[in-house]
Length: 204
Image 1 (cartoon, rainbow, N blue to C red):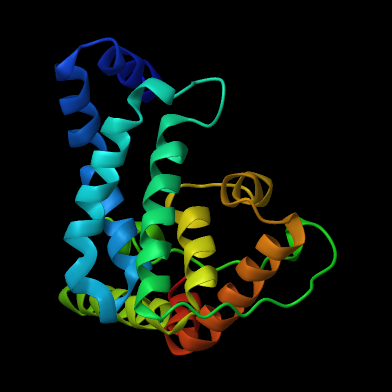
Image 2 (image 1 turned 180 degrees about the vertical axis):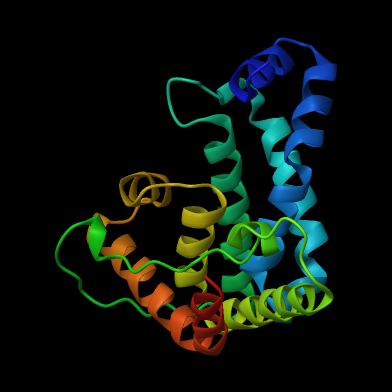
C-alpha cells in the first residue's frame, strides 16, 4: 500500500498500517531530524524524533491525501518541531539574501549519501571506501556549519526531493526566500566540500 493509503487505514483504526509506515520511514526521518538539529543538539534528536511520531499519531484524522503526500506532511512536522527546538536553544540563525531568476539558479551539489554507488563503482576498493566515509563525515560537518533555515531547505530538497515551489508551500515562506536559502546553503556546502568535489570529479 502507498503511504497515503496506509495513513488513511490507520486513521480508520488499522494499527498494523501504522507499523508499516513507521518501519518504512523510521531511518530517513531520524536522519533528517538528526542532521537538522546538528551536532550541538544531537542529544535531543531522539526526543524530537519521538515527538514527530506522536504528532503524526495525534493528527491522523486531519491528514488529507489531497494536500501534500504523507512523506512530505511527516517531514514538515519533523522540520517544524526541530526548528522550534533550535529557536528555544537560541541556536537558530537566519541569513537570507534576495535572489532573482528561476529554480535553475540553485547550484548543484553531487550526492555523497550513497557512497561508491553514486559514482557507479560496483566493487569499491578499501581506498575508495575510505574516501567515501571521509567525504560523508565532512558533509555532516559542513551541514552543521550552515544556518538552520538553510540546512532545513537543503535537507528537505535533497532528502525528500521537494521542489522550491513545494518547499515554499510547506514552510510558509516566499518562493524567493526559499530559493535563496537553497542557493546560498548549497554554495557554502560546495565551498566547504571543495577538496572532495575536486577529487570526485577527477574520479569520474
